[in-house]
Structure formats: C-alpha cells, structure tokens
Image 1 (cartoon, helix red, strand yellow):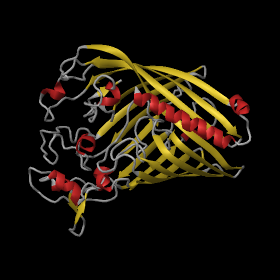
Image 2 (cartoon, one colour):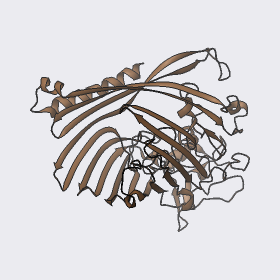
Image 3 (cartoon, helix red, strand yellow):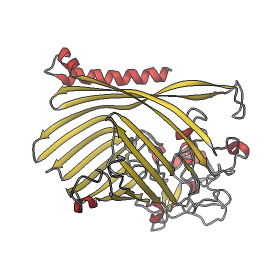
Image 4 (tube, rainbow, N blue to C red):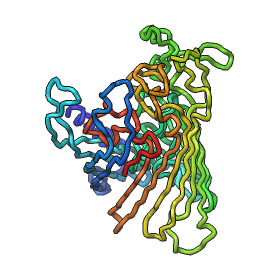
Length: 463
C-alpha cells in the first residue's frame, strides 16, 4: 500500500505541477472550467480451454496448477482527467484499478498450501502526459507529447504486431493477449511531424519500463505514408537499449560480471564474423514494416463498415546482429542468434465484412520461427541476454525440455468489437497467442508462473 499511494502521489504532483507551470495565462479558476473527468469501468471473463503442460525442471512445481479449463474474472475501474491548459496544450491523467481474487497462503507455507481467498484492489497508471501543438496549419502539423502514454502505430492490429514496441530483442520475446492492441506504453518524449496529412513521422526517446534491464533509453523512429484510402504503408527502427544506465546489466559479458558465474562463460560470450570474442548484450536494433490495403476504395457506397475488407500485415526484425556460439558441445546450446530468420515475426490479418453489424471482426495469424520458448525466465531470473532453453540451468538444452519448439511457430486470433450507443463496447476474442501466464492469472499466482506462454502449441487456446 505504501508503493500504491506513493506512485499516485508522484503522478498527481507531476500533473498539478505541470498545470501550474504551463498554464501561464489562464487562472486556476479558468483551468478548472476546462478540466474534464471521464469515469469508466469494464468486466472481463474468460477461460483457458486447452494449455500444454510439461515438466521444466521443477518436477511437480509447474504441474501443481493445471491451467486447462481455468477461469479468470475481474473488474476494472478508472477515471481519466483531461485538462486544457491553452489552445495548444493538454494535460492527461488517467488511472485505473483492478478488483480481483487473491489466494491466501498460510505463514511458512508453499504454493501447494492455499488457506483461503480474498478480494483485492490493485491500481495501475494508464497515462500521465502533456501534449502540445507547436505548428498547426493546413499543410504542416508539429506536435510533442511527454510523459507516460500509449503508442499504437499499426491502427489495424488487434492482437499481433506492433513489434517495434511490443517485443524484446536479445532474446526475442513477443507480447500479445486479450484487448491489448492499444495499450503499449511509452515513458519518454515523442515528436511528431505531419505533412499534408498523408506523410507522418514520429521520433521517440523513451526509457525501458517493461523488461530487464530497466531504465535504459532507446531511440525510435516511425514513418507512414497514406496518400489514398487504398493503401497505408509504414516502417520503423528502434535502437533498443541504446543508452545504458548500467553497462554491467545491459551487457553482462563484462569481465567483472562473468566472475560471479564461474563455469557459465559461454552464456555471456560469443564470436563475431571474424572469430573474435564478443559479449552477448540486451542492446540491438529492431526494424518493423507494415502494409494495409483497403479494397473499399474500389467499392463506393456506405454498405460496408469502416473496417470491413481491410487486409494488413507486419514484419519485424528483432536484432540485426548475428552471433556465433563458442562451443558445439551437445550438452550446451550456445548458438542462440545465428539465423536472422529466427528473429523475424510475420503477422497478417483480414477484417471480415459485417456490413456495420460489428465495428470489426478481425482474423489474424502469425508465424515466428524462434526455436526457443517465448519466455522471460532467464531475463528476470538469471539476468542474461540468451533465450530460455526449457530448463532452470542456463545453457543446458535438449528436446525433452521444450517439445513444442516447432509446433509453436504458428499463432492465431479472432477478435470482434461492437460499440453500442457510443459509450458501451463489447469485445470478444478467441486466440492461441503470446499471452503470458501472469497476464491472465494475475492476483492468483502472482508472477511465479508468469514467464511462459499459456498457449505453447496451436491447439492450445483460450477465449
């Protein structure tokens, strides 16, 4: 509760301080007149219909809680405050909270011993930002946004895609799940340039707040061109972890760090194309490209819905640099990043025409040839930039540890949305995607089971 209130206090202080400093001309009374509040709430329920289960070195540790037919029901509440400071500046403070079920573990108990249950409320920030329009004329628009805010650069993606901001680099980690298409968060500053409303460019300097090593700064650039309704093409580059706040964490292959892990040097050191030793690092360059085709351009009229018939796709490159492993020992698997194709996810989607019955009905599929589990286990538990090999001992590898290394290459998702009366929205999804266990079971098992995907093969799915 101390962290809960301190985080809220800091956010409110930033919000009020920014309002006081930047308001300038308007008095506090005038500012209050321009302050809008938008409360909201939603209920989510779903079920894991099928989920693969295996022993990953913990024995019965993992199998104790079978996810098959597991239900998840929770309630989210929140409020969004929008303050108009001047004609060109707007402040947003958006806070949400989740009411969910928590197990009670008796003192000195293990995960096997659940003593009861209680309801808990967990708050989370959604946005705290200041947006300003620097130039706003008919041909050219320049604006900035600073703070903590959502960024969605692929407007059609419902579940997969958004690889520039929704992925790890070394190792290659993908993130997807229910109703998260517009919830990728940026902590930093964005500058945006729009020319004739057809050419758009954005530059970001943002801090890592999602995965280890946290606080490193990345520099990202996006561009998209949409001259006519028929097509929209975009691309981007992100220099991930470009500015390290702690080099020993970003590149743990440094001599001082390796000394703490005697015997595991191959996990930190690789070779370059010249055969010279180089350390593995969390830092690297990501690329993304996308294309949307809207055939409605050929069919004038208003029978079809706004999103009907759209075809779209996106491809990512999660790290341009290849590494060569140090050994070929059958008991060690250190050839982690030798093939760039194993770091290139590809998604594509189609919006089924519903003739305005639904806002959108999206069918999406994704191929990703990464031979390793989509897991954050080594990132957080071992703090090393190598893929999870299916065992608690880094570097040990064998087919028994990860039997779904090829069967998990394909993912699928079906998403439908309907808005009623302008303020009620119903969203439904069935998918076999990259939802991690903690995303669905948060509050039940915490993050203990949170590193691996719920759906490890195409036949695993949830709704």
